[in-house]
Length: 222
Image (cartoon, rainbow, N blue to C red):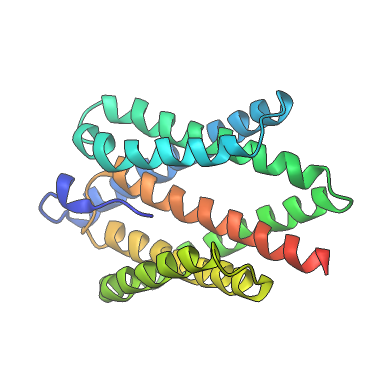
């Protein structure tokens, strides 16, 4: 779900440089979120089918795994990150179209969006204020990611709403941990590449939003 930092790793930074990376990360994150939202609206306007989500996510993952790490230290990385986030937004639009058609769909979308924002601001604010080192979470997050992948595979064969709810809740917890982990790496000088940092945080927010949509959608259908 999130990138491997080893490909673009550099020596740890001092506080001034770390703050610069943090600033650049948040600026790029804001721009990519806005671009992703625009692409989602385009997708909704042309009424893309839900299959567009799967295709867009697969292409974005391939670009994130094999192309972005090789371009993250150059200006080309900016174009790649916008391509990735644009694809994710375009795919998301096809999902949002389904929710908009529901009786309380707009409310579900607004609630999920607000919840995602609150989670991000709360966790980022905590990490920035306390400046705690959350690098110890790395192993737990990786293990959690493997468990969730297995659970998602199992859910393809076991169609139980409770399992889908559990997986979505687990993803929210895991991605929340990733936000703490990524923010901590930036402020403590462990992450020196703002493009890769943006990619990781964007993926966390994307997954949280999708999971909140799933939870709210399932609960509202009961």
